[in-house]
Length: 363
View 1 (cartoon, rainbow, N blue to C red):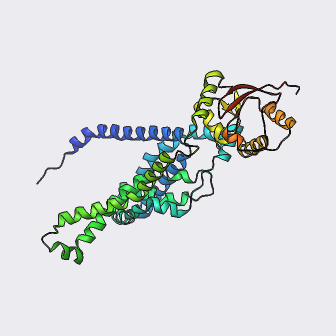
View 2 (tube, rainbow, N blue to C red):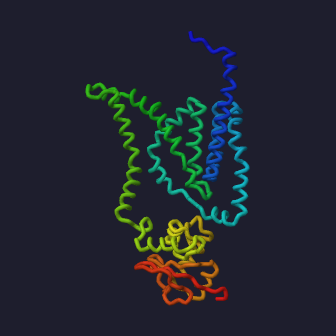
View 3 (cartoon, one colour):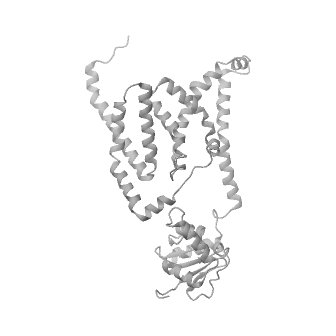
């Protein structure tokens, strides 16, 4: 009979175990801080998942999870100053407040999630197994997997972002469901016994066949993404690809203008200029541009039907230094920059003309 460790041995190792537990908590706190700094909205996922986990422990274990609660408490208390700071910034700073109001990422139709995460249906028996066996560590995965789907359709801006990381618990739960439920059920069925009764079908080979078949079922969504990327690479559609002349014009901006010089363009061109040349732009990324919807309409009006007085006032109000007139701008009929006294040509090629804006404060 194996001898159990003495109380003295346990007492000797107790400080070491305590240090290891403290180190784990500190690493968890650091990871949480880095997560909040990188993606503040993920704090909601952490908080809701931990609350759901504690609720599951209380429901299934029938006792208040004080030990777990004490270990998880630092994850909430230590990042609290950073959370308060973010709250103040997003409620008092007009730029960040505008960003938050515009940065809406709504969830698609549930069918899209079903197509993308369909193979994870194996997670359901995994969830049932962990709930039945009341495994404390496994219940954290259960809480994460069960509480996330409702978050995806809450009436808040970052809906779709709440799915980030969900594949981690689903993958583990699906593996548990496969090896603890599906395969044992199949191997104990009459059909399995009938198939393996033939000499050419060994249980081990049949098990491997089932695993390969399940793996192949997970491939369609990946193949769809690869196929779409392949078509994009072949067809070179805009805005994934830009004409060489347009790229040369943007490179001219990078070489001959300051990053503080604001360039006036339409939406897609502005986003590209900001990324490649580093200039400020009148209209860039939809979430990063203050009053995005208003500026979209103003750009359409400017390159469409508008008076020169209105155009000059717009350029003056936004302190525009250069006007980029390329294929996307020419597609909006109504504006002919050539000959305008407030625009001086600075660069030109077969597709793009860049004008320096010359408007005095008095008009």
